Image (cartoon, rainbow, N blue to C red; front, side, top):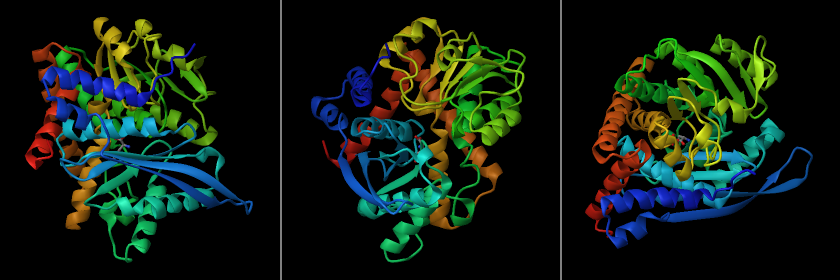
Length: 417
Ligand code: GLU
C-alpha cells in the first residue's frame, strides 16, 4: 500500500528538527512553523465549449523577512492547500540556503492542464492573476514556473498583471518569462544545471569519478530532460534509465539524451524508446546506479522503498521527494543525498538573476548567467557539506539548519520576535 503523507506536516517536522538543533526560542520556533499569509480563491473560467468551469486556486506567502516572497505556480489535479504550504516553506529555506535576498511562497491551481486547450489555459492563467494579483509585485511576491506551468503561462500572467496595474512595464513581477519579454538566458535549464553543479562538487568530495558514471532519472519534465543532457555534457555521465508518468525504460549501455527528448516530444512519453527495455517507475528508483536524479513529484522515496535504494548518490531535483523516515534509512545505508532545497535551487537562483536584470534593464550573456549560477551553487554546497560534517547530520538537516538560522536572524533584526 502506498504511504500517504501530509506534506505540510512533513515540512514542519523537518523544520522542527533544524529548529531544535539550533536551539531556537519558542516564539521564533512558532512563528517560523507557519506561513505568514495564505490566499484561497475561486476562479470561474469560460471553456471552449461555451460553458464555465470553476477552479480552486491558492497562493501561500510563507516568509518575507529576507526579501520579497518567491516561488512557482503549479497547475496540477492533486493540488491542495497543505501541499502549497509545504512548498512555500521549502522555498523559504531554499532561497536562504543559496543566500539570495528573497523569501518563500508557492501557488497552485487544481486543474488538469493535459486536458485543457491552449486558450483555456490562457484564460485560467489570466483569471489567476486577476484574483491573486493584489498580493503580487516585484517588491512583494514574485511567481515563476513550476509543475506544468511554462514560460508562455508566465507571459500571459505578466500581461494580465500589467494591464490590471496601470499598464506600465513591470517585468520583475514574475520570472521564467520568455526571453523577448525580459526572461534571462540560462533560466530554462537552470534547475538541472544547478543540480549538476552540486553533484560535481559532491562527487569530488566523495571521490566518485563522474566520467562514465551510470545515471537513472525519475521524472522527465523540464528538470529531468536537462539533467540528462547536462549530466552527459558537463560530467561525462551515462544515462541508463529514465521514467515519466507513462513508465520507464532502461538500457545498461546508455541512451543519448537528445534522442530521448526527441522521442518524448514526438510521442509524449519515454516508453517505447527504441533499443530499451521497459522498467516500472518503482524499479527504476531501485537500480544500482552511481547517480539517481529524483525529478518527478513529492513522496517518491518513503520508508517502504528506501531500504531498496541502491544509488551511491541521489540528487533531488523535485521538491519533497523523500520523507523524513526515508532520509534516515537512506543516510544510514551510506547513500549521499543532496536535498531538494540545495539540489534544485538553481531554478530560483536564476530567477533572482532575472529579477536583477529586469531591475537594471541590462541583460547578461548566457555565459555570465551560468558562471554566476556556478559560483552561488558551489558556495552553497560547501557550506551545507561542511555543516553536515561538523554536526554529523545528513545534508537535509544541515541545509535546513543553515536556512533557518539565516531566516531567524532576519526576523530578529526586523524586531518581529
Ligand atoms: N518552481 C521552482 C522551484 O521550486 C522555481 C521557483 C522560482 O524560480 O521562483 O524552486
